[in-house]
Length: 316
Ligand code: BDR
Ligand code: CA
Image 1 (cartoon, rainbow, N blue to C red):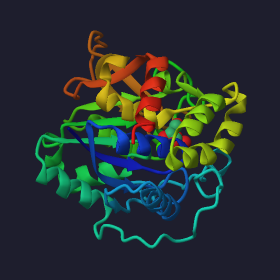
Image 2: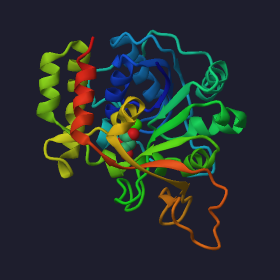
Image 3: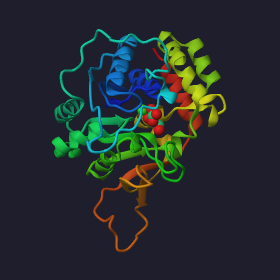
Image 4: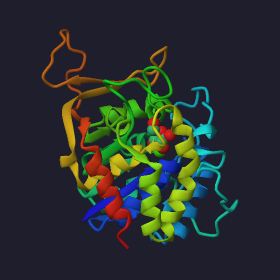
């Protein structure tokens, strides 16, 4: 069993990835931690509790960061036009959900859970990397106790989606992302290079919903305005960014990867750009020496990824 903590900012595509993690038979989802991003942390936490309740997910929810790791960084706006004002495609969601939160802040929950399960935890992080960076700052030793960190974020050989060079999760807190990428743990970076070519059509999702239970029908309903938003880039469908990272946990063979040190540009016109120095290249004098080698996805078998999502979501 893969023991997963899901760090997320639900978020429409976050919701699909959550249902995947909950339903996959080889995944034990042991915690959900929330972060600001697709909406404020109040909203993303409420959304996580809502989905937990609707989908009967036993994992506890711990609320995380509301702002960037560097408090002097100017706040960026929530992308309401992407995920809706309420972060879940503006379907009806109660203002409050009558379920308890874990009493600890997200980064503490991560530290405690990693320490209680040395070598076993897989962190799947699909929002700003702020909670992970905080956990590392407070307890740097967790880097050697985590099995791996699979993130949705960044872009290497394709353009960004919030600036010509930056992807939303990294651009939303570049300093945090740089801390995460350069820490001595194994990071797998699932970025736009692979997620932007993994698109699920409205009809594919609709057929799943027709065959599936109430959970899949809810997912279909909350995804409709997100699909409308993607009209500029996808023909009647949506990029399933966060699900790609979740799929990697159980099916890494569906991805082509390279290895190398990864850094994040912090500031200037390339703010939030991710850069990889492949292990087989040297650039003397080499400032990259000594940085950990991470795994960067450069290719994906999109059809098989979509099939695995469908098969898993239809498993009850
Ligand atoms: C990422 O940004 C968010 O909008 C999505 O949930 C995903 O995690 C894609 O750039
Ligand atoms: Ca997300």
